[in-house]
Length: 226
Image (cartoon, rainbow, N blue to C red; front, side):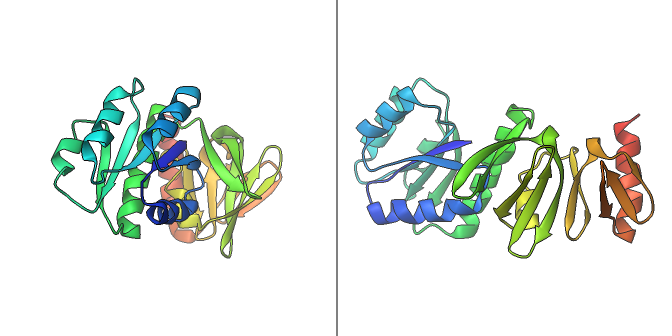
């Protein structure tokens, strides 16, 4: 999912950009301190989300948004809450008061990611690996395992190491397609070939299953095949 940030305050812009590094499926493709450059970029490139400041020149902000022809998702930021009600005339996901709290930003971004996944049928996600964003089709993911501060995606073509917690990455996956069967493993339900009380088998992989997850896995797989 492609995102741009628009903020006249360069320090605030950098701060928001740094906070977004935790979201592997979100790619910040542009950072702008003025509306002209932002508009030129949007016209020529694919953008899904705008994080935009409502500053002192608030009318310029809303005029800019009125000029857009694309129905883009928007997260507003501002030191003033006066325009929060007006912001919901647009495709507003949230209105965040500065200084922005990390938890509030995470909630807003997760809301966008969930909506995006539903609208795109959860076909793919973008993950950050080796300083680059990679497009990964969900059907190609076999399972995901925790590696300390990192996770490893086991796919049909290769293994991908990502700086993320398993809990955080789990939130970006569409429900009903993946399941956490162990504190250190998430599996693609459609790729399970066989399983028993101790393990799930996917191709040549043998993934452990927690004792308390076996009943839940039974129910989920039975529901999928009924």
